[in-house]
Image 1 (tube, rainbow, N blue to C red):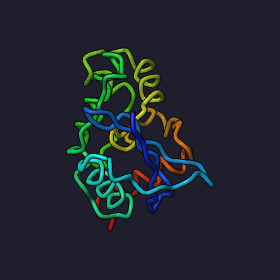
Image 2 (image 1 turned 90 degrees about the horizontal axis):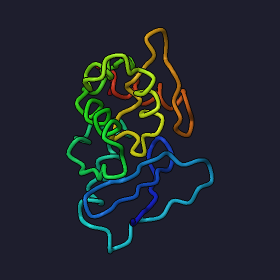
Image 3 (image 1 turned 30 degrees about the vertical axis):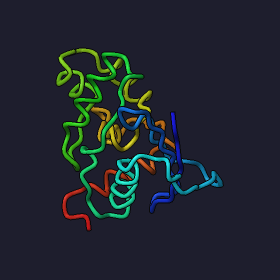
Length: 159
């Protein structure tokens, strides 16, 4: 698995990929190194970095077009990922809503575990999942502040 780090308006990000697509995307902590992609990275990685960087700078980009390698996900995690990838920017779903759309009514807690284990933040938009009675948690670096900033970025009328 190849990987790189890059700077964004939300801070540094780390991206890892295999032959099929992106396997991991995460927000890095303060002080983690940012490196330019090597020339050996496939063309679509440069395009993915461009789209992610534009999106996080407030310029909407088609993140759904970035290829993903979901081979590390369980079948249920892949179902949850498909539901999340089908949500529109600015849309939020409860854990129960995701379970229903995944064909598993009553599996809200399992959805929570799948969302928490999401290795491809932003591209599998787990920041769009909220608890029925409030925000819910988020395991990415920056925690709830970052989740709220990502949702604000996608809010209708945001420029």
